[in-house]
Length: 579
Ligand code: C2O
Ligand code: CU
Image 1 (cartoon, rainbow, N blue to C red):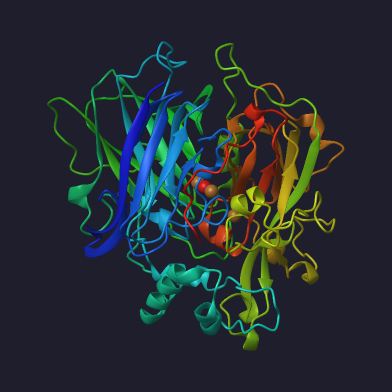
Image 2 (image 1 turned 30 degrees about the horizontal axis):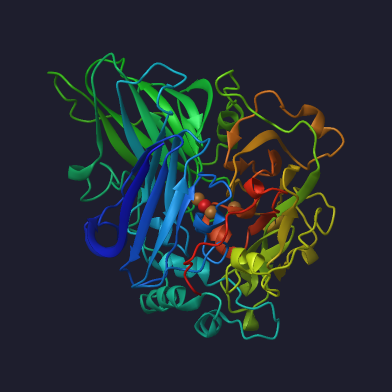
């Protein structure tokens, strides 16, 4: 159980991609950012110095942080931002997670360039539940040129700053008057407005920061993974993308998924995989083809309709060692079509916990607290129909038709110090209406959400089940990767259509459900998750598509303290950044 010390300095760093050079926000000048390597049980003390121009916080995605929400990171949920010129020290304790996780900024959209992998090796004296790989390679999916793209304006501009219907909310004035987005997003928006507010068309998906061979000016930088014939490699994959779920495959090679979200699964051998923003995977690749070069490729899966969508492909090269003639051109591997929901769902359904003696699971068999929530897209009227959503409205998103309003001080601090008026504890246990959520026509009064900072409260050590129902409001049914902080949860059931609380629980998998922190709720369908609420604190829950989170598809879960000192949240650290 080692303690590791790291310094992360955030700075604007000049970067050239796609034939243009711009400043992006980086950690220690690196994009993707530095990797954290630990063994299970270790602790990392990580000091962040913010030399950038904007507020920032960092989050350790998938690290449970037992009893220590103070170091979890989501801005205005567990802490106030680290302001430009300030610093803050995170204490990251690795408990039961093992495999690949990641860290990222959790402040506005800055995670676009501020992210990196976390590799958790088995505890000393233990080993992988699969033969030791010859070597390992990190594969991070992201996008190029994303620090302050005008497309941020496009998405953020539709967010309300007030639930007061009389507030002036036409798209230019409300953001400039805004208070709850504070200075940094305002600057981004103003900058975007100056540039005309149009998305940057030279944007591209990336593998390890590189767009790959199919893009202008990118070929020399294409990421290469060097392999030797006959050896097996462990790929540590992270989808750090903002809004796109991705299909990934390697020409002529199969992939064996052995872990997801820092927990082992039964080996699943596939020709392609699907990875949502927020997810991580451990994947074995056997270099068993003739020595040559092969493309690795990723392309977006877009379950939605009418969403501006990038169907381009990012590539990397799997390069065998040895003497051979390199083919003059490489062929792309098979990838499912961008709208192949069956391909996406079949892959996800194949994931099963290892559930072995060495890696047992603890899925709750009974339920103390059940929450049935919907995740929806919504619209809100704009003065003079001047916004860029349908009929000049603003697009919003919600859980149980409540569009989450980010508070102006952190919920954790308010909870700890019993400051009232920051959040409400009346998040409903059921949606405010019952309906055919996945029908094509849904009554228009559901389109307008209410606003609030409403959180779910559960007792310490209670067994919690959350059923998350996708909806087709606005005819925008799509897959949503929902993420919970502070926990891994068991994905006990999912299906298409409306959840049926009488018959669907009969089909739950309580034997070997995958243990994850992020789950794609299938398009026009539902997912049921369970966990034991044994980690007291305030834990954010949100869609990991950044535009949906920005639009309000968020809530938080307060898990109350237990009865003893060891079952209570750690006391508030001496220094937390002020708001
Ligand atoms: Cu990957 Cu709330 O985070
Ligand atoms: Cu979503």
